[in-house]
Length: 168
Image (cartoon, rainbow, N blue to C red):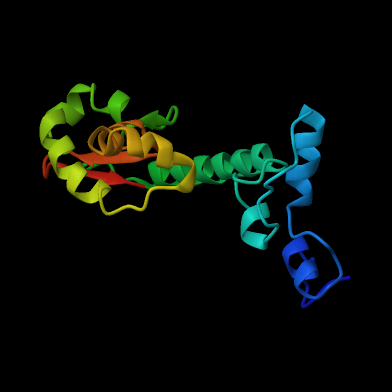
């Protein structure tokens, strides 16, 4: 059955009385294969099954994400003009903020301490995910800093002349 060209999700089917549970069927199969409990499954919505949050499709979604971004980076890098001041610095792999800020070209823009101070002002405005509440409750101050430095970025481009870091 298709509604407006979409496959109905368990969440929708439960809403119209065609299923008893809105729990994600893909997550359920993945957990059963690992011999884990199927209690507390996320609701199966289009957003859920198209995200890396869905246990049953996370590997595929992540692979597609990397493939799309790799092609985009390659295209941007290939189209870059010779006189461009932009420098692509993470073309080879994803890096977290802590790893990147050990590199000399980042330290020339600002110190790790300066960035941490500015980042904390922004990080505290981001909602804490339910799965991270215990970690947050232990030490809210260090939670935000550790969260920032552990953030993984797909691509970063810098303009050393203007001292700007672009997160792509």
